[in-house]
Length: 186
Image (cartoon, rainbow, N blue to C red):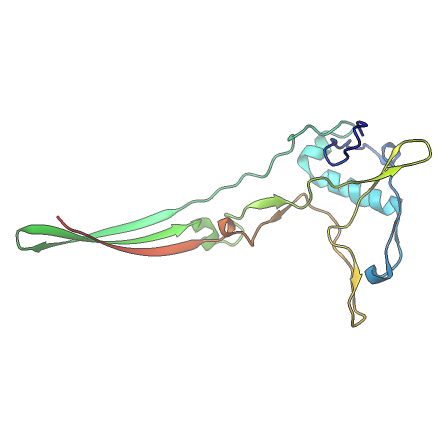
């Protein structure tokens, strides 16, 4: 924490071990199924999260650089098939042009190809104030919290385990096709 009273723009310190970070227990509400997500459980999950991320695991014991971690490589391959059909009408030569365009053809061939990835969370830690010694305290929260539905069924919640997820809801992560017909007058 740099002391400017703005906690959303501070760079994250990447702890080497549990002694280098103060985590606070998270008490789950009754709607979340009750119980406590302890600081020890949070650090175990945070440690696993750091280990799976190439950038974070290589920079333990340091502050993350602004824009230091980058998105995974993204690629999209497009293809066009074009066929001209010529005809003579009188003394003029006219052309009928048929086309098929496939955008992101990799995703057409394999649903794991050509998908764009987005971060699950820009900062895995949430600032939660200071302890009695004036040290910052954090929480390592779930990606989606556990909850209890109105019918009494309970969902376990999803822990934040991966830096990125496939953005399958984006049009850029899906293949698309279009057919075209064009008549050229000469």
